[in-house]
Image 1 (cartoon, rainbow, N blue to C red):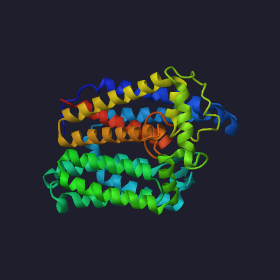
Image 2: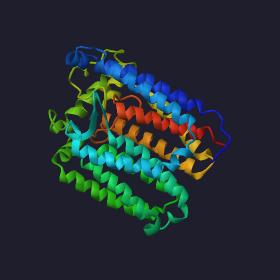
Image 3: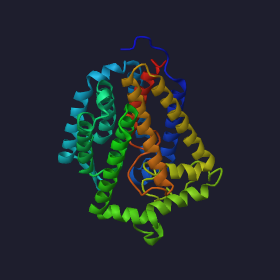
Length: 363
């Protein structure tokens, strides 16, 4: 276990808090109309987001001060609990927007698929650090991990939640590559993954509609192409400076989920190209400092842990912004630190706390 502990990376803290502040502001701006019509309170979603942010910052502070090696000892147990929750959500979960991904607890609910993203990173970092010499072998090194990640992906797909499953699998692949897995093995797995993805798309009619809506949204402007069209209608008028904070038109029941998956479209509409570019620059700076932490970590476990967290954040940002700008088919992925969502925000801040703890030992 590393002994010399310094101060956490200031730029990671700054970028995280800046993005979080922008997120709370944009959750209020994008959801005020919906909040009032649905709950009679303009601040309903904003207040809950502020509460989740407080819980997340507290978790981030704890994780920043608890040595990251402690979680190595709990990797297997934590992952087992996550698998139990994934099974439990299929039995007693709450269905929203066609996906049974939440377990309700009083007025709040948790999303087990968000938990397993974090614990899978912790477990893979531990496993790969302890068995790095075996990762070049398919049977002894790669196959057990593929079975584990595949089982988790299968349970997530039963909800179904393709977006979250894709983020988890992509993060695992990045960690395997960094640990030294042969490119030939990863390429073969990639081909199998593409074939499997095509199969999943063909197996669900709504996914086929999303693909056709992505390729030509104007073929079905009131159906499969509706979200993409409305998102672009939000981004386009924003121009360079935006329409002004709170002046979005698309949040008036034109753009679905303006406070969650499509919050970046509302941000671009109200704050323009400069606002959107500022957010992307903050993410870029955060990811750069995160990779620096991974490179300078004192041990392989810490390096893989940091790299996995950075990969998870980067993949979610790429997918979310890609969907909002019409570059990817529509899928339910939140924008880290900005989108409304308790489990997603709290656990993302928890992951940043882990990254900051590794940064305290970085060389």
